[in-house]
Image (tube, rainbow, N blue to C red; front, side):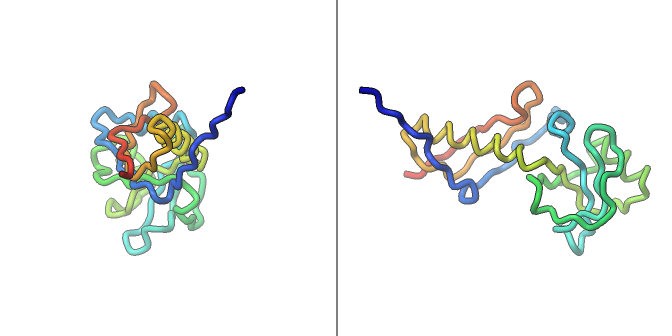
Length: 151
């Protein structure tokens, strides 16, 4: 008699995700691959994007205020280190003090959630408490590192 084992359910909102240092700028490659966007928000209202540009061709996709909650967002801490962002700031006359985000579509988060569930399953269904997300354009876009499980 065969027994089916269901995949563990992962409460993704309870998992602390940290972004790994991206010294090889994989994030921009993944952003293009996943058809994400770069968004700019005012420093006094960082949860609303005032300008958004396609990660595939840098064309403006929105000029209305867009809440960041609908995306998997990665705040870019040092935007001046990214040539693509310097280009967008300059070409569009955006204040260099703007908050900059890499905005991934919701399906991107789903791929992270699947990896979290697989990690949990490989540890007997143990709850995942934290993980480091590393961008990798040679795979599905991300790899989980340093996955920590509840005791």
